[in-house]
Length: 116
Image 1: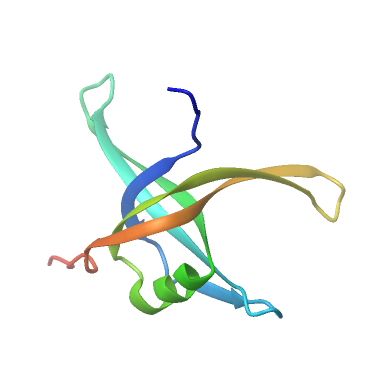
Image 2: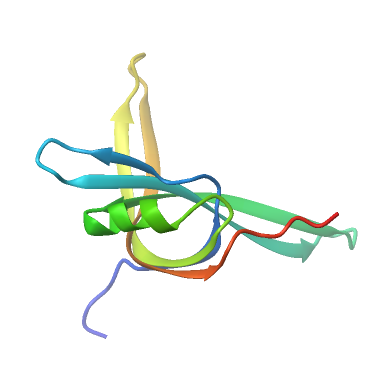
């Protein structure tokens, strides 16, 4: 292996419909959040479900595509890379965030059906 790669693959469900921002020069950005979960037994033998939320950015033509075809609750597989950002709040505090910049996606199933 002669090259190290920054690659992320996730399977999860969308928490909300993607938000799209269009910039002056015609470039588009879609922002979405994807939930992943896992179940495990704790020390007491009880099942615990752990849900993680992931912030995802999608640029260009893919941004417009995900805005058209993805909706709340849809299960997707995504591939992308991790991007770390830092910013300063109005109060002068330094904050950090990690987001996934998506390169490709695959719809696995429509919205989850509600059971009674």
